[in-house]
Image 1: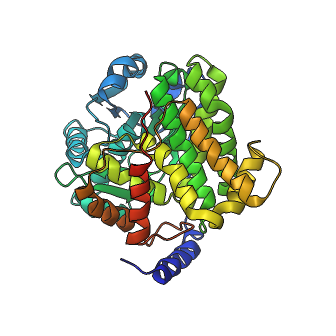
Image 2: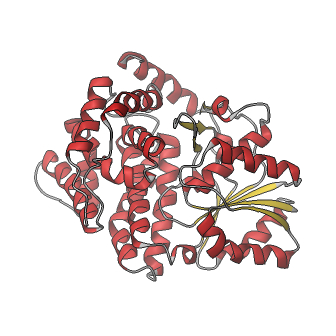
Length: 405
């Protein structure tokens, strides 16, 4: 594994280089009923035959609303509605094959992070047909402009509608490939709160905590941040603290639903530049090995990792405690600890467990290897984990398991 010195040197060099790169930002179309504008966006991009990518449930409940508008506008489409949680290499390849066979010229990704990641992976393979998914994993391996891409989130959490990332699972090895390339940032993000109205409370909770994790990890990272990403992360944290539980308790609260979509987008924008960290690196191993929903994994791991970081993150977490109104007096450490305690309290109120007791002893070495391979040297985390530190955190996740309900 890379040494700490190497990791920091790599990050310093990348930080300089990243300032010279052009970071596109999706054009946002938002508000209740905004999916009606999708045909107009497709015509603007001269798309005549679009590939619609979603999951089974969304394909039945929400996709018809978009498909009918495409029919009325005379835009042809091919629907793929078999994306599973934690999308696999096989699914990505099937979508790419259908896209090419039907002569499609654009993508609509409808759903949470899984359909968006699957569509991004397929789009990457469309422009890089000779490269397998594993060969595209890593940083800046696509390097070609994707076909016109519209991302339509149906959850407020993943931020995939604004990020450079797609995470794809190898169904044979259970390893998660993270493809990260500026070309994966969608051309448009359509944020329609009506699509999240019937989201189950449990999914609302875990996807919302996913957004919080994106914002907190981006904010506490030690490099890559800009004034714009810092502001976006702060606003996202405030938004989640203010509106997530309202959305959790009342799916018809359109103000809360709208604000959560905005917070998720801002958190996605922040971590697109500033990166995520050890929380995500460990969470991805749980998704690969046990098919643990990503937002749930992040929600459980976030407070544990922040506690493990200790005083290195106290100043930043103390500021987040102040702007969210969690705690405005006391020492920096007291404020930081209060912020972490409030994350735990939010989890508890939304019936999210404190740990996971399903992690098997035999899998821990593999988890450590995958997590460190993902995070080092690229993620500019406050504390660079080695095998011992990573194992310590994983064992805390197991020991603190106290499932709710």
